[in-house]
Image (cartoon, rainbow, N blue to C red):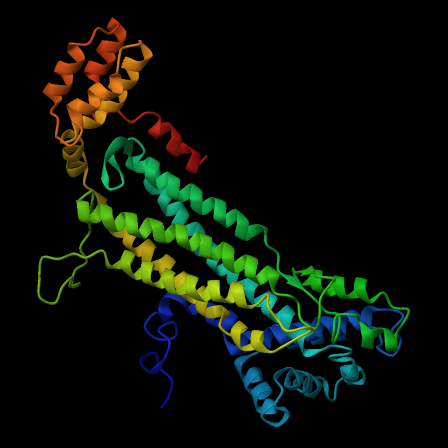
Length: 455
């Protein structure tokens, strides 16, 4: 059966491919092999530049361009050739080495062919390739993360002054504004993005057990730590100087945990928006031709937020497992990380699908200010808080208990609250302020606080 979206096992490569297609170049087998080639070429170029490694002659400008072109022009057809070689070698990284030797055969680079993969263990190439995949995949995710956060900022600015009844424990609570609540989410996302941004993927290029054993046996006077660090830095990574055969993957775990925390904030938003839609605080724009229910024609379901929630759960399950598993390896190396790492793109894919579902859902929302106002006007009991607080200020007896008796477990009208205030022996200014107060105006500094999300 030919591979098509309809025959894909994973929805990432099938139903949801359009939402995460740019991750294919990064996390596919082609993406991995391409980055292996890049690392091998960068290592060879560094060896040629090391003056003390005389047998690996310095590159001419033309040769340097040709070598870099092998990596930059690496195609799907090239990757297919590597996989063909692998059928014989039964070793994926060795197949890359042989592919590169084929590519330089018959050129002036051929005399340096034995310095391809020189002194390297497969993990030197793989760990750097995986780090490059994560670097590039992170860049894609971050653009999408910024997009959803800026959408929330835009919505927050537009609704910063729109009052809304807050709900703590699901019950009516002191009013807030729509924009301030959206600003809270935007600020939380921004904080987690900062944690993601600060992480630079660690990498190693130090041989079979991390000691430069083979390197020093051939060239004992070369500063291999410095040479390795230079290659790693040139690819936008940072050197981990203390490793076994593998780079310990602690940095990968940190990145996955940081992404999972960001995802959890977005999931929290999805659930809250779902609730606000069900309460009527938001309407959803209808899309011509769309059907909400196969039997109930009136329905417009919050499916985008539900889709996002489900995909975020999958993403965090995968990212969480990998963050717990990858830092654990028996002694100097076992292969349990190898098959696990091949699923990095799954966690990224479900995250990107979720982000775009949330964005789609946010784009359909319309604020229902009439419903917001009606809910506020039906809950005058929320003014028990400011009234008892002013009573405390002026030293009246048992203010909390008196308001509790008046309001707890019952609906209170504007008239009842104003009659209660009118009967209080309060200073004139305090009484006038409380008499003018309504649930819709009792929003504290919410409008001003919302601005912190976009300052």
